[in-house]
Amino acid sequence: MMNSSLSVTRARPKGKSAILQSVSPFIRSMASTASPAITVSVHQHARFSQRLPALTHLAMSGDVVPLSRHPSWLNVLHDGLKQDVFAIEAQRDGETCGFLPLAFVNTMLFGRFLVSLPYLNSNGVIADSPDVQSAMINRAVELADELNVNHLELRHETPIEHKAINGSMASKVHMRLPLPATNEQLWKKFSSKLRNQIRKGEKNDFRITWGGEESLNPFYAVLSENMRDLGTPVYGRCLFESILQNFPSDAELAIVWAGEKPISCALLLHGRRCTEVPTASSLRDYNNTCANMLMYRHLLDRAVERGQTVFDFGRSTVDGPTFKFKKQWGAEPTPATWQYAVRRGEIEAMRPDNPRYERMIRLWQKLPVRLTQYIGPLIVRGIP
Image 1: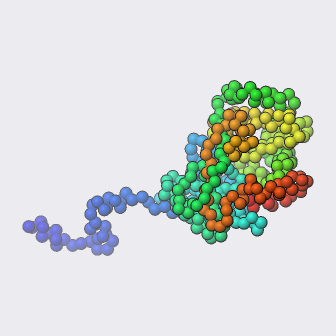
Image 2: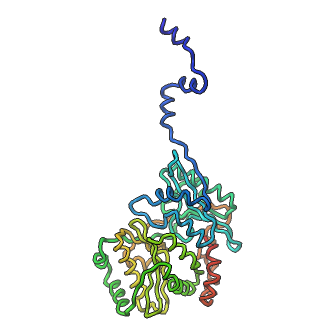
Image 3: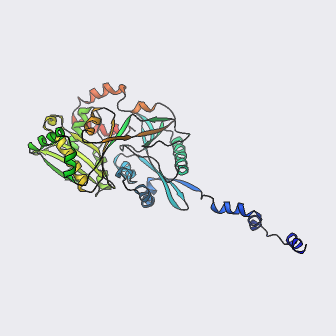
């Protein structure tokens, strides 16, 4: 009885400590192990540089990571395409646990879009857990509302479940080739037909050079003419200049020459054990010389020499011409799922293969190259 009396008459602690000490041990245990809150911030370009180291550490972690995942692409798009860019960052206990890069594509001609990311084939949410994914998409949707865009576009490979995502596009695939340890092993994997095409290119006494900004003029000359022939507006020279400036050790230009004339070109991006070729072109007049086949052999060799384990040829429509070209090198398809939070309009409206653009393509193919170099960049920067 004495002990019971004492327990009843003991003075209770006051204030917040009274609440904490009066809860059951089970509740206190639950409170101490609860997940820390996730905070989500939006950084515009002016503040982006302060967060770049932390975001790079998260985005570039992993065994095989393409350079297209690097946060510095926001600088590239800001400087090279003159787009407003945003970095959505999630933190837990002060540590970065999520990243979503976004570019605001805004033109009177086509509309307003929020994209992760233009020019690149694969990007979107990087997160260490589903709840972080959800929190960042929530904030991206809010930003899409604030900017009054047609849609939010996330260029994912694996789809993410979220209530705001109401559209997707999975008509294309990534074409990727696992690389062996040596160029000799790579050569042995090629079919006899492919090896003969490469040898034909070698017999034409072409030469290949590698470079950075000093190679921009011949690179852009070939690219502009080829894009005109395809009926597609060409990106501005400043985009590629910005890429080379932001990635001086990991981005390079390959040029194939016939004498003093550049006839094929490519941009290579070297990430962690993965090399990508987001842009490549060859002049049509040299198609029968197999100059393009020779160039791709050198691109693959270059990746192998850097110790890469994957070569990414880019996206293609299944069984389309570029799909078959990449397939002959041994590349295999992997899924690509672009997801959308559509606010108005249709996601197919802005795709280059939309039938409504056939007449414009035919007209573009008749324009002088110099004219397309001037007006093309003004058009393509507004296409998501």
